[in-house]
Image (cartoon, rainbow, N blue to C red; front, side):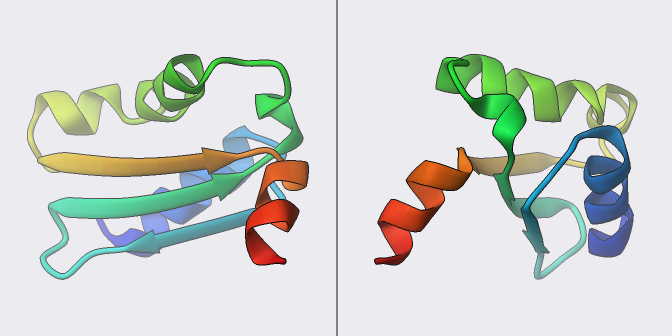
Length: 81
């Protein structure tokens, strides 16, 4: 998958405030997602929400690894200040 494809899947599947996807080789991805859907949800479940969108790509190894950082808008603002 391409970085833009991953970003598009996340943006169309979840209500997001910010999505960034980076990759040097198009199989190892670094993903940051900021969304209100993460409010009150444990981090492990936040990550499962994102990875579940790509279960087929992970299974067929078109995504070999996905490093996730997920934040609520409030937490994201706290990090930015």
